[in-house]
Length: 162
Image (cartoon, rainbow, N blue to C red):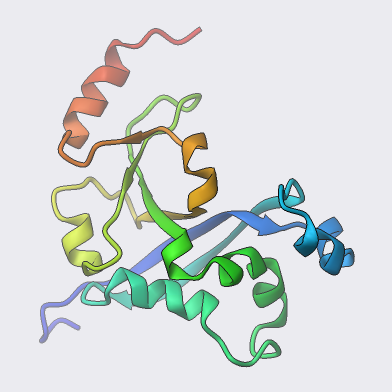
């Protein structure tokens, strides 16, 4: 690690559209439903991920397993992600220093490395990546990546909290 001058990140991975316990009990019924409302956030920390890993490869570690018994609970909870495939998933970076009531995100490029995606962004302790299904993208406050994180920080400091 030090000789290679590579950062190995611990990444907080959040899956807000994971299947909840009720959905797991009625899996066949839930999968046939077009508008899925039986989901809850599933989180895990992925340890020591090289900054040189391409983001789509990271997603593949969660959704492209051939053995459902490999990580049974995770594979069942992430079944909507597996059904959508990589093309149906976006990865958001949760911005630091923001109003707790109104979270803002930047969409990351699946074809770039973690290092390229995190370049110029503020990371405290470890980055938080939010893996979302594209059909629910409208539910998130995604700012254009051209806007800097300092612009968002400045906006939040001028926003009054109630």
